[in-house]
Figure 1 (cartoon, rainbow, N blue to C red):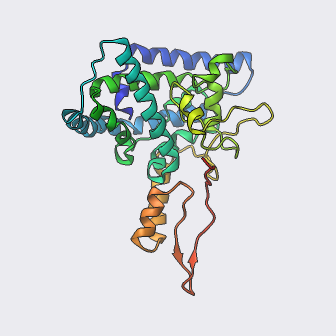
Figure 2 (cartoon, rainbow, N blue to C red):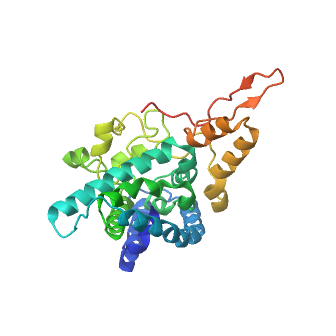
Figure 3 (cartoon, rainbow, N blue to C red):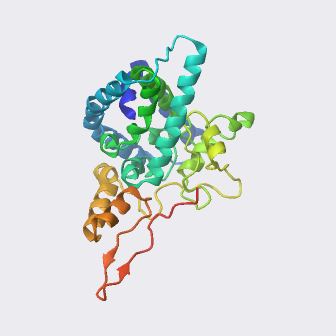
Amino acid sequence: MHVVESLLPFRLYWLVLAAVAIEMIWYLAVRRRAYPWRELLVSVGVMLIRIPGRLLLPIVVLPVAFFVYQHRMATVPVDTWWALALLFLGVEFCYYWAHRLGHEVRWLWASHSVHHSPEHLHLGSAFRLGATEVISGGWLVFLPLYLLGFHPLAVAGTMALNLFYQFWIHTDLVGRLGPLEWVLNTPSHHRVHHGKNEIYLDRNFGGVLIIWDRLFGTFTAERDDTPVTYGLLGVPASSNPVKVTFREWLEIARDLRRTRGWRQRLRLVIGPPGATPVTAAPDGADIRPQPVRPMTAL
């Protein structure tokens, strides 16, 4: 999915750095709060680890995308307003499901959990992203767009704008935005998404829009009486970027070794992140430990 990052103009990265610097100043001078410097450094380390994966991702994804596009059912030009609107809504719809599956399927969560590891929400946490998207396969959700007739590069460009939009919503310095909260994904909505409180867990998966969450029952509004607690449920924070990047993959490997039978192993991998291994007890009974990260009912 993050193959599209390379399509962003280089000058936008200077805008990102300027925004992070302004947020730092706001934390220290206005809010008089300590800035999470350690988390920022970990995020930078994770970003550096991602570089090989970012180089590999287009090598894998683009040939598949163009192969599907060659077998498209129609051709949708992107030179009219209605086609651009359809493209935008199509990318938003696919992003919603790719993001939601990233929370509901443990194999995809292994990559996406990296993004949820910070215990503070600040602009620097926006670029703490998994390095293994090519393996987890969330990008496969976008293949129907190519089959319907949207050009892969047009989809990639739209997705790039989607991801760039999401940069600014990773902050707790911006309050609610009135009527915009009904349609757009806002900092308030995204704070909920990063929350590990029971009422906030696994909610608000939208990119630019929040309408799909409202339609599919995954929307939760931020509550004044329940401050958001960030981080991974049941997982202590780490200052080691390598551990942050590969922790869940190692957990999956460990659980697979402890699990009996290929059917149970498959269920563990494609089941929710709260899925646990089925091991053999001395009397032959199954042992199912309590989930470390229970899912909310969606």
